[in-house]
Image (cartoon, rainbow, N blue to C red; front, side):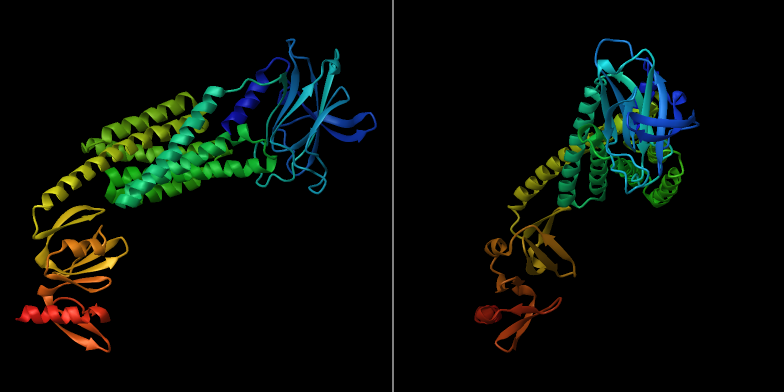
Length: 469
């Protein structure tokens, strides 16, 4: 996106490059010895081949320097190029109709041999764009002659790759944390990291894949959409952390603001506007939290302010580099802090389990929410549920415990009896039993009856008769 604009500006300022003001639009046709043009007039506004065939002509000078040169075309169009009547090549096949056109690549390079230059040089370009999908305000990002190849940006590309990898790794990490702890904040942060990582992939796609020009429009739509989702998630995260009561209202305002960003001209401005809505609302929420002296609010506000300042100082790199570094710098420290917290929680849980071993009258219940010691006398029944068990308590509560039923059968004292392949009952809460065909039901003082397996019925009867004696 922004790189396309930079390419256009770069080409316009290069020595010997034909800027948009130098181009003429003509009537044209392919002749036996090259293109035949007539009725030429200066281009007014932007060069726009969308939904039509366009013939362009410009007088150009050979750029200074001894190295090889090429003519560069960046935009959503198929194209053919001639220099002084000599065809330099074709990018796809332009045509007068959608059926006649074969879409070319979004970026095309046409090498120019030394023998093609003359004292006076005429450059002719034939273009068409019938397969672009959505209509763009500026479909052609750049046209120009320059030394071959163009300078690359390895540092920016490497930084984007690194940010993308870190963001996708952070998304996976927060996803694992959510599976373990079921916290809403970890799920939000996983989504934030994931959409940022996907957007980084879309941003670098043009550098890695020479895709056909129709893909470019939907790539821009995807970048804008992912930025909008990130902005909403950012507002949701900051709101839930500092302004939980106003979170829904903040999200509603963000939805309206992001929807209005769709009215901005050009996808670059749409994307920047959507991101600005999310950062702005989050900064307001963090600012209020600073005024209320909430923990962590100062650091959050400072980070948002630094990102906004960098964006204002370097707007040309905001969407395609600064944004990813901002997202990575936001979620990675939070991921590390969450991992440290999980380690401390696990250590505390181990300590609690060790201490509970000396308390035979209690069962230490480990769940996603922490550790709880439950007196054995309050347990009415233990019901198996795959790798977990459900503890049914005398007060009607039901707790999930991260343990298997077979292990608990060996650890619980003699007052507990396995009455079914998935049920252990506390005999102290049993009122009696009744037969139901070849099976039976255990009548409890609290809660619903428990099933008795046919092969366990004699053991249950003996246990109850022994308790009665």
